[in-house]
Image: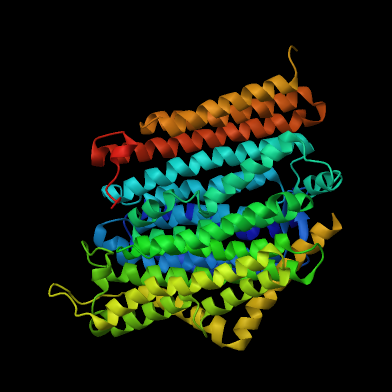
Length: 502
Length: 103
């Protein structure tokens, strides 16, 4: 361990130190929500600055090649910090009326984010696994954060049981891959797999390892048919937590896919591509079909997030299905990264509105809560419409460009992947039904007699402003769009150069 | 040392399968937690077996096995805390009775 190693990894250390600082501050000044929230917001901004600062220097491997700070790491780290920031801004309005403390919430959230950041730059199988566990364990706690609420604990136990089940499956896959290739370093795993005779069938142990890894990862991103925990975990969790769970762990799991499948397992791409294509197709379709029948907005958004997993997987499939070294390979990864950014902001925004409506205790997330919102709280209704239109993929929002990117990449890749493009477009049309149903409730139904005004705090407004501005700007303002695309391209190229170099 | 790497791997796969079956078949949250522990320990057995039979993997195997044990302990802690929390709310450890959200 040298000084440069520590400097390169400083954003990660900073986030962990911040979480500990918040716990200490809570011991000194108990029950001061303002202190812990203020510290977190300031700390996350400093952390993002630090990440950008570290990204300025050359990409380098640290800790003897176990971790790397390259554009992909920086891209994902900034996104994770932004997700944490929005979650922290949105949370107080929901947690305070229910008597839930902020300090533990922010500390747990920051530990989870540090796990995500550990995944984003991981170049070692063991570090990947540790990052994954550091990401999901605080996630289980957050899901059960309202511990006196039956729904929250019920969601938490389902999330926990299925989550640790999938972790065990994933770990067995890692162990077999490690035993077969004889190394934990991702670079050496790729080199060892590249030497395999491509024509011969894979050894049974490696094939089993690959199947177990795929299953484990499919659980984590909530791909159909490994999605059963998602609706209950999302509906039961406190709403700001649901917002976080639907983007944070999902994007982190895709980061894991990029590091593990795209980097380490690239030489045996042909063996996992068909699985990705099939999973993407059924994930999109089933997620959307089931979402059509939901009356609870949180549950509806849970199924919609499953569908969005499918769209992101189309980007992965475009990479996997494209010939090695082709333009479509890069376009697929770029689409995956761009979609992750757009999805993070629009989905967090939609959940932020649900949180804002649930500011008063006892307000449910049933669709009736949204009735007449256009008259009761025009701004909330307009923003919700924006996020829902973006989730549908209507231009000129971020969601449209994200969908366009992955679909174009899929067309470019050709073969069976171009069938996915057709399925994705058909699905986007079907999805419009259930997203617009909420809009119809907001603007064309009368508010219930019992409806009371919607209250929003300053922090909630800031969180909504960030998500709304990003949702519009990523789609509409060329400098922002091209900035994100450029960053995504650089990040994608890092992966491709390395896999081509062996 | 008796046996071969293969026999240890088969044993660990069998243990893993028993754990998986237990997870899918049992309805008690604590029993499901125990099944997950069994799965993790099966993985650990395969890791240690790799280390014992392949000299190049010996050092790595010890470290990975220790890490997996630490992670398993952390997971059990979080899991038991959640089981206690839900037991206080619904007075049962049986997971098929946690069905408030199924419509």
